Length: 190
Image 1 (tube, one colour):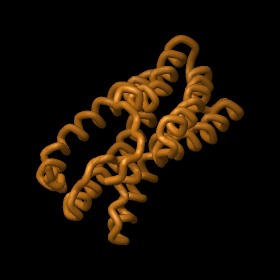
Image 2: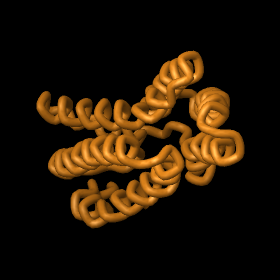
Image 3: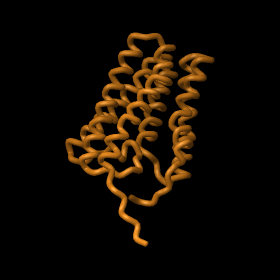
């Protein structure tokens, strides 16, 4: 494991969820287009903050920011909320596909995609990567079902609360696997 700076978990949570919360607040006050513009603006400071504190840029926030800016721009220019609603589907499919592709090539990429700081055995990485890939594919399907069958208000609530809760719950359920396949820390010599 390398000694590289990492973000405090609370700050990482704010940088990851802050733009989404800003989107929800702006949506409930002003509607989907102002919410989308707010999300785009709120995403911008996260990457420089990540870089300033860690001297690297994590993969997920970079990809998410690019998709938010591209699909958010299409949403605003074309005044069509479909683009911002399909953004989560595209992100989930992209991450699920990258994880599965890495497994097929014999390189579990979960540590890279999730900016991981923990160490697992090769078998642990394979199993955890397979689980996360499946989870991302399930979220993509769920996002499609919700935005295509429900109102925009229900979709925003699902995106803010449902996906966040599902992700935290899924991550917590992976703890037994992670402890079972954790690489033991070397004994300290005194």
